[in-house]
Each structure stands twice: as structure tokens, then as C-alpha cells.
Length: 148
Ligand code: DQA
Image 1 (cartoon, rainbow, N blue to C red):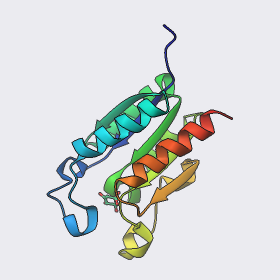
Image 2 (tube, rainbow, N blue to C red):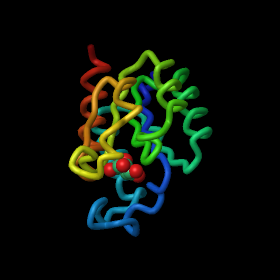
Image 3 (spheres, helix red, strand yellow):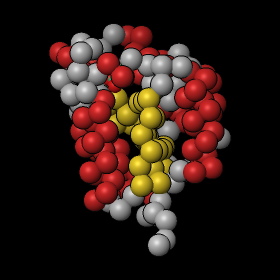
């Protein structure tokens, strides 16, 4: 059987606590709930999905480097590292595949320190503010880009 293209969705710090964490901002769904939605969307698009979360910057960097070999598209919600990590930015710049920056919340409607993203300049595009649907829109965007 031919292998299907694989998309990777990486999640950064504190996203393991979705559902418990500031539900007024991030909603009531857990990361496992979001993962299941992503699995359904990937299946519909006939894509394999690798879905991971880490609270550690270096682990995210290592996974991005791994995705460079294995992924046909990457979506990343880098959490707070979005606003701080030159290392994640540099790792993403090594990739030659479509990259979507994802956020549950609209980072531009929040505190000033969230308006700066180190991810955006290394990404193909950005989806933010749609809650868990941001992830599904990212999968759609990756699938469309990978068809080009
Ligand atoms: C977030 C927004 C970030 O500012 C924050 O640090 C997060 C989550 C989002 O999905 O809305 O951890 O990336």
C-alpha cells in the first residue's frame, strides 16, 4: 500500500493543560479532544498525522528537525515560545515544506507581549483566534498547499 503524506502538528508549553487552563480564553476542550478532531480531519484529507506536545523548547526544536525528514506539512502552536524562541524560529527556517502557525486565541487582541511572534516570519501563514477550529483550518491550508 502506498504511504500517505504525513502532516505534523506540534504543540508547545502548557497546551497539555487545555480544558483546565484559562477556559475563558482557551475553551473547555482538552488537547486530546483537539487531537481527535485533527485525526478525523486528516483522515478525511487522506493524510497521516503526527500530533505531539512538549513543555521543552529543545524537544520542540528536535521534533522540527525530525519533521524536516518525515513531514509533508507542519502546523505548530508553539504556545509561549511563539513570543520568545529564536531557536524555534531558526529550526522552522530549515524546513522546505508548508508551515502553518496556529493559535487558539487571537494573540493580536491580547496583551502587547503576545503581538510579537518569532514563528510568523518562518511560517507560510498564520491561523489564530478560532479556538480548536484554528487547527482544522491549518490542516485544510496544509492540504491545499501540499497539492500545489
Ligand atoms: C497560544 C497563545 C500564546 O500567547 C500562549 O502563550 C499559549 C497559547 C494560543 O494557542 O492561543 O500558550 O499559543
